[in-house]
Amino acid sequence: MQQPRAVVIGAGVGGLTAAAALHRRGWSITVLERAARLEPVGAGISLAANSQRALDAIDLGDDVRALAAWQGGGGLRTPGGRWLSRMDSATTAERFGGPLVLLHRATLVDLLVSRLPRGVVRTGAAARLADPGAPGRPARVTTEDGDHEADLVIGADGIDSAVRRTLFPDHPGPRYAGFTTWRVVIPAPDRPFEPHETWGRGRIWGTQPLKDGRVYAYAAAVAPPGGRAPDDERSGLLRLYGDWHSPIPDVLAAVAPQDVLRHDIRYMAEPLPAYHRGRAALLGDAAHAMAPTMGQGGNQAIEDAVVLAHHLAPEITDPSAALAAYTRDRLPRTMDVVRRSARTARMITLTSAPAVALRDAAIAAVGRLAPGLALRSFDGIADWRPPAPTYPAGAQRKARSEETGENI
Image (tube, rainbow, N blue to C red):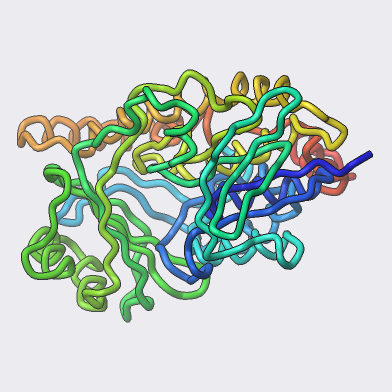
């Protein structure tokens, strides 16, 4: 039987996970990435227990769990430093079956590439979906070096996905969420700190440790789209957050202006009619861009990739039924996470002083009276498990052992 062939457009987290998962299922894979090289760019990414279990399908879950840096306490603070609510890493891991892992995106990309044969990822290869294909007709992708025909094309080309526009030209695409974000990775500050997220009026800040000793910090603020600081983004951050509690001033002091990443946040307010058409499928931000307020964007892309591969056995000659099943599995779940992330975004971007005071008082009261309640917002998200057959044998036994308490 001829080995089926898939072309993945985009070498981000979702695209590389899909490539690795399909490779393990027996597919021949080509990943086309427009960037000249897979450079260590970007900032941090949060991987919760749901994506860690998905990564077990490509024998990568334990590698990610080993990178967990958060130990002990942390929580939510006000700009003056008062703790609104507290939580600890052990409680989070126990509730959802795995730690919350913060790591640099470049670290995750390197791990994913290590699960692929040499030569699968082709950089400097801008690609366009010329034909999504149909039963009896392969899909076709064009590049400067020629055309690629494939049994399957995966559009993992991000929030401005050209593949999405080709498949669904009438869809309006992502909508501006009303706020912008900044992200930095710096060496660890001299003074120790507890991981935290800090909520102010129309502004938030987060400071989180990475396993390699560095610190990932992020900020978000209500702003018109397309804005930029009149001098540089570090100076803009100092104006917004320079008088907030420690370690925020220490973090800002260690930031080089050129290392600050700024992005407006957009999300898929209107769902796509499907995540596939013909022999082409979408995943990650190309399908369901979401606000980062629940830290689930990369997690959902990883889930997408593993579920897609689960439906695509190597003996499939026409993927139409498999892709329809993928849409049925993923569209309702991911759009639920999109909506929940948007609701959280509205809460953290309140600008009215009375509304912020009421929000903070409610959070503090819940923290005192029901300390574990904050984690419930992730019920139905972080406790997700992939379809069991996607596990390799060892990971499947381990997952069953965790669920039942058996000593296997």
